[in-house]
Amino acid sequence: MSTPVVIERVYEAPIEKVWQALTNTLAMREWYFPQLQQFEPVAGFRFAFAGDGSPYGKEWVVTNVVAGQKLAHTWAYKNYPGSSEVTFTLAEQGDNTRLTLTHTGLESFPDDPHFARRRFEDGWAQILGSNLKEYLKRNS
Image (tube, rainbow, N blue to C red; front, top):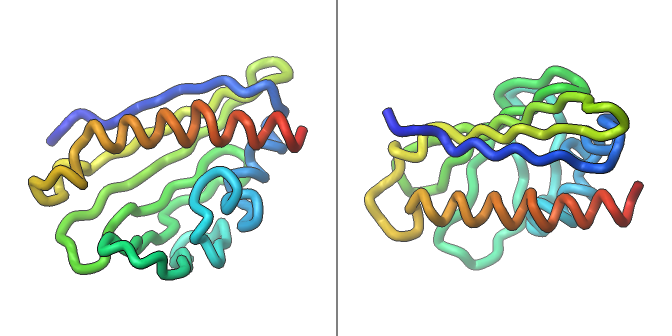
């Protein structure tokens, strides 16, 4: 078993705003994946994505929801072996919100540059450190 990717960020936004960003389809399109067509924070819900011509089509399913605190989903690709899981955990920190992302199971993907751990680390750094941070600034 490999070491999970774990990233923590503190956002200058109340937990309710961060939770909304994690669970509202329109918000998620802005900071997470613009191809997202439909999402519901309900265990068993299958994300719906628009085709973008990529050979790495996403197949994600919500696995765990604790309203206002935790959202987890699988991260898998059509026509490729392997499945990982992404968990967002929120905690109040005064007027701010601490988000902890844990991405497990990356070792289950093929030995291919597209699935390299570094790509996921860099991707999460961009998604959480820039995209979500800027989204929350614009919408607080």
